Amino acid sequence: MNLTGLREAREITIKHFLDSLTPLAFLRPAGGERWIDVGTGAGFPGLVLKIACPDLEMILIEATGKKVTFLHHLIGLLRLKGVAVVHDRLERLRGPEWQEGGDLVVTRALAPAFVMEEGRALVRKGGRMLFFQGPPDASRWEQALKRYPELVLEKICPVALPFTEESRSLVFLKAV
Image 1 (cartoon, rainbow, N blue to C red):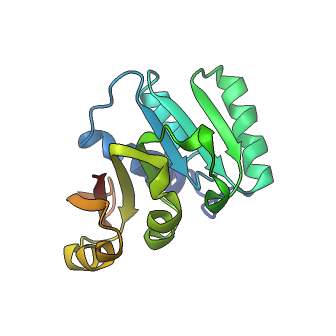
Image 2: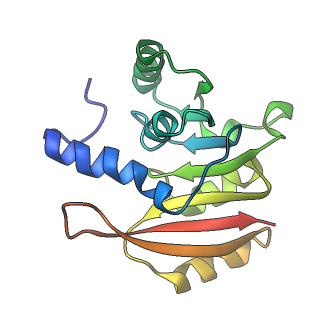
Image 3: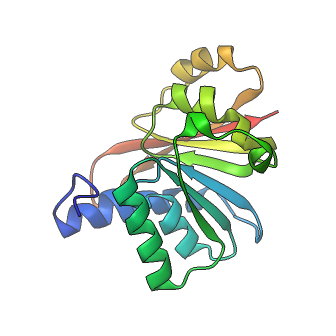
């Protein structure tokens, strides 16, 4: 279905599945938490995290129709409960159904500035935003956050993608 740019099984396993699971080294999800994956694509990282943590309530947001169709099919095939797919763009998600917010808003695919601008309303007060990034760069984040006083840099966790030499970081922001 041409859902990702990767074609080799080893690359898909490492760069999509294992990468999607890296936040679990730093997070201990509680049952009933509501996580929102913005720009989930083929379900990375949201669907992978949902499978690993079945007690989470997961909302997958995706704008591309064929990816949404794939996600619905896969969720039905796996008989997953507590996961919803929203076919829409982040900047259009407004209204009372989004006021409750999520405990965690996560993205691997979208630009952090865009998600902070358009998606900060999706995070409940005290909740977090999580960005998958390249090598750690705290000064860049501190500079970017000057525009968003309701978000603070909680931590940057350097990670090494398993079986590769690729340096990554998980950036956690807290909504205050």
